Image (tube, rainbow, N blue to C red; front, top):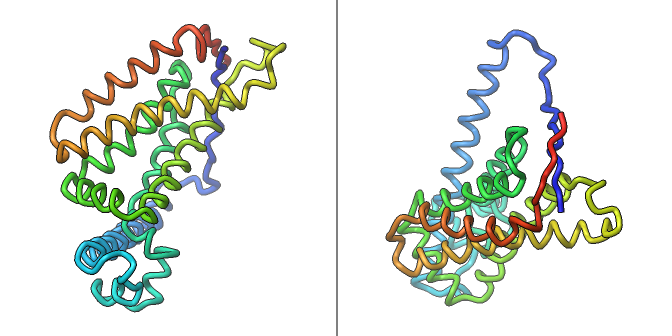
Length: 237
C-alpha cells in the first residue's frame, strides 16, 4: 500500500494587514482560555461528587452548584453529566487535527498520525493526578467508561479519514475497495498502541517516561506496517 502526500490548502485571510488580526486573535484566545477554565472547574466538581456520592446519586444541579454556576451554564459546556469529567477532549481533537493539517510534505502519513495522537497523551500527562483519578473512576462506572470510549472513537475517525486521504490511488487498483479497511486498520493500530501505553502509565500512578514508552510503541507499529501500509509512499507536489 502506498500513500501520496496531498498538499494542503490553508485558508488565507482576506485582511492583509497582519496587525488587524491581533485584537480578534487575542480576544479569541482569552475566550478559549476562560471556556477551558470553566470546563475544568465543572469537571473537578463532577469528579469530586462522583467519588463521594456516587455517579448515579449525583445530579447536574449538584455539579453546577459545587462549581458555583447555574444549571444552564453547565449545559453550555456539556450535554450530560457523564461528559463532564472529560473537559479537554474537544480542544485536544482540534490540536490533533492541526498537526495533521500542518504536516510537512516529506513526512510519512503514518508518522504524522503518530505525532497527532501525541497531543492526546500530552493532555493526560499535563495533569497526571487528575488523569489517574479519572481513570480509576471510569473503571468503576460503566457509563463513564462508555463516554470515554466514545471520545477515543473520535480520534480514530479523524486519523482514519486522514490516512484514507493520503493513499496513492494508482498503487493498488485491483484492491481499491480495500482502502477504507486499510486506513481504518492503520489508524486503529496507532490508537491501540497509544491506549496501551496510556493505560500502563495510569495503572502505574502516572509515573515513568510515558513519551519514551509511546515512541517505543509507535516504533512497533511502524515496523509492523513498514512493508505493507505506507510502504513505498510516493510524494507529489
